[in-house]
Image 1: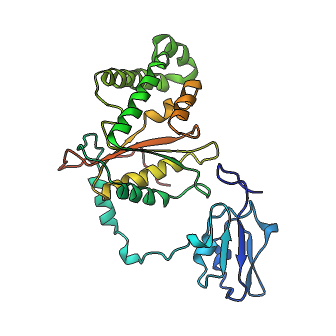
Image 2 (image 1 turned 90 degrees about the horizontal axis):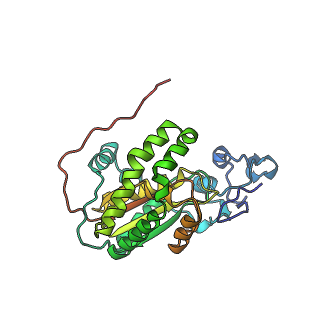
Image 3 (image 1 turned 45 degrees about the vertical axis):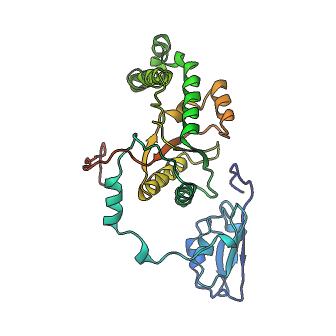
Amino acid sequence: MPIPTSRTNDCATISIDTATCTGCGLCVKVCKDFGLELVNGKAVVNSGSAVFGCVGCGHCMAICPTGAITIKGRTLSPNDIFELPPKESASSYDQLMALFQRRRSIREFKDKEVEPEIIEKILAAARTAPMGLPPSDVHVLVINGKDKVFEFSKDFCNFMRGMKWLVSGWFLAFMRPFWGKSNDAMFRNFVRPLFKVYVENMDNGKNYVTYDAPLSIYFYGSSFTDPADPIVAATYAMHAGETLGLGTCMLGAMHPLIQNGKRARKFRESHGIKYKSREGLFVVFGYPDVKYSNGLNRTFANETFL
């Protein structure tokens, strides 16, 4: 039974060249749909033992040492395979940790556009992000150019004006028994002040929504998307931006407000956002206008070892 996404409703097909198959069994070992087996020293497709049908993860094609396996379907083809870079070219833990430690949320940007080739590198890195089930059902909206980002932010503030009832005293009092103390505190102490900061400052020409960034990328999903996928892809993009000399900042407040209701649907449609999405994230990019010399140690709320 094929697993549906917004991109495909079919299973992929696996082809095995028995002349070049050595029967090493690696493909059988890595296929977690259990649709491959060894028969008389050769790998064969056994659709009767498959759980879902081929989802197009590509593991069998990627691990086959002789290139005997090809997959077609679910947006995957033999043309998508490439040789892995040598292990020596990968960053060490210390190098990766240095990147993570150097990253800070930047909200002050130079008046300089982000070059198209840099944007493509960011997207190329984000496309490598792992996903719940292939093919990726992450959708991406690229808002390129300071003026375009500002206009989007201005439209968002205009949208928020019609949503002020969401943070009104009567509505919060009405909803408290239904959504609980923590949500009530979040709306009173964060969402309501945020409405004020966004809208009133935009009225004065100050963009505190996207901070006059020259580039904003929105990662979102569809009704089929694993909720974690847009967040993981956005994280990859953010770190890619850091390696390319850009300052970055994740913006979590915008996504939830454009998901529900007719006004939200119209806003999404007017900006080419194809679906409402359980999870999503805006990330802004730009050349930083500030430089930090120090970082801060962070902690988790809890770390339990079993």
